[in-house]
Image 1 (cartoon, rainbow, N blue to C red):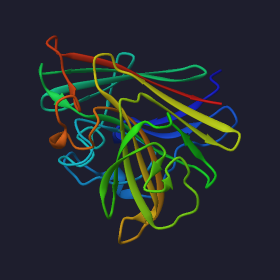
Image 2 (image 1 turned 45 degrees about the vertical axis):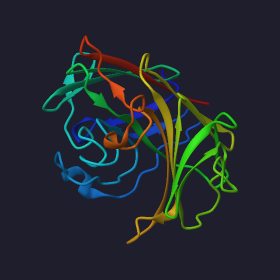
Image 3 (image 1 turned 180 degrees about the horizontal axis):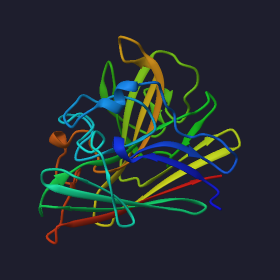
Image 4 (image 1 turned 30 degrees about the horizontal axis):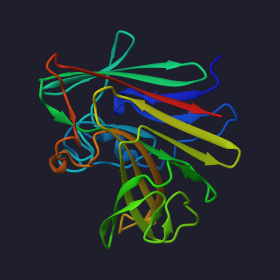
Length: 256
């Protein structure tokens, strides 16, 4: 029997709706958003939590990409979603962790961003473990600047603490794994994407967004590419489909 429990909603973007570790901890944050079940391709993003598949962009058009709002169909050993000019297949193996394997087929030379948009259910004491001193792009309501993990303008980004009304988005290009420690529980996500640029993005919303009704949400997102928006991605900051028209990658998630 698997030591980790995963629940997936294939009809609504193949979203991971629950991820429980061997100690019973639920790692995925969720919020009540019944309108999430009614979305259609091209609709504005509905933040219901869990882990959303974002492709071929995160920010920009379409909002959070094209595949989160589509039904994924059973196909062989997994699920497939099709758009106008791509086919994305995902299979999942459960053992002592989760291994999600992806196959993208599309036009050679096409640029893309993919993200496992994982919103995590964390206590105020949780910490995000990333290589100390790694360069990061920092975006706040007031400024965009560069810094080195974990210090961003005097604030320790590895800690979350109580809600203080701030919102920060971080992009750490070149990383392919992240570990979160919350009490005695640990979650690690590792991306393997040979020949493609990778990054870890962090969405640190401590009750500062959205303006109309702010709530707390923490995202740790393994990515292919290193910009949230495809349109802003310089050479080397987006994935590219090679001449054979196929890209393969895996996301490995373990909890202890």
